[in-house]
Image (cartoon, rainbow, N blue to C red):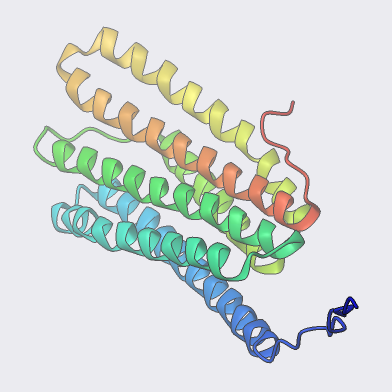
Length: 237
């Protein structure tokens, strides 16, 4: 006589850790958001200090910008590690996943802005050792516009505002035009005043770094659009 072995009924498993995990995940997202905004605020301040040090040929302020770059790098590494940990522990989906992946891109752009600020400060150190050379007026306007783009992109990130992010993207062409005008002016100066070539090269280098800061601000704005709308707009005309 054969015995029929019946399998026990399938009972849905209870996950008592599910609710705490959700709370932990939400708290981790909040902490991550605060960390990114703190890094953004720090980098934004660094840009301003680097530009002032450059314009005023302030050696001490320039050195402080250079020394402070280590903190920006450490901030990026810590946030990046937290993002990877959240991906492994919580396996987020949809908008939460977009937020984490966008964050990893944004902090990379912010770290590069910190590096570019160091470059500007270093150009100021060189100029401080050279005969006085007025900085083109377009340089100041260009720096102000680039900083406004960075501020705008971070504001769009705080508000999750794709419309504000797109406004930032429209500002980039003006920065490019100012860089061209600075290049044209300095090119003429260097042909007429050979003794200014070294100083003019430092100014041109700093201007290029400012233009790159504007590009990274645009990258952040594009990531905000991706975060809010799930649409990748990079490399689109």
